[in-house]
Length: 161
View 1 (tube, one colour):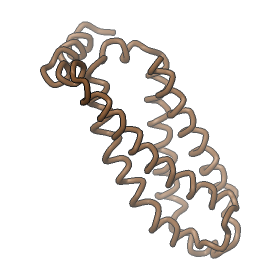
View 2 (view 1 turned 90 degrees about the vertical axis):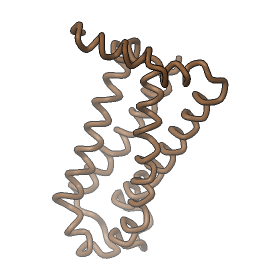
View 3 (view 1 turned 90 degrees about the horizontal axis):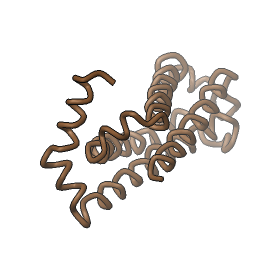
């Protein structure tokens, strides 16, 4: 890790806000709860959508399900990002050098790219799928999404130990 990055991470970790979070008896657990709640919203909605793409609940049209579930995923993201950054700030140096954290970040990027691919190239055709089966490429995207989010959650849990 370069000296500039290490210095920035050390400054972040020693900031007043990070110190307050780290030493508070309630602030760190509160941020963890927000982070987990965000994960529940994001990943729960994504899993339900992915399961539909994989062929479950075919009576639910994909566009209708997307309109219902995707706003919940966004709300989860609104909780995950700030709480995750604040939690990271309390132990920035150690986390930045942890390979499990690197895997988590890579999986987050893969998850974002996977979702972006679906919305950019596949979502517009979803009304044509009706209540039938999604095309194979959509199923691959759904399976990738499930695997990626399970890995992100597993890495997050592993970082706690």
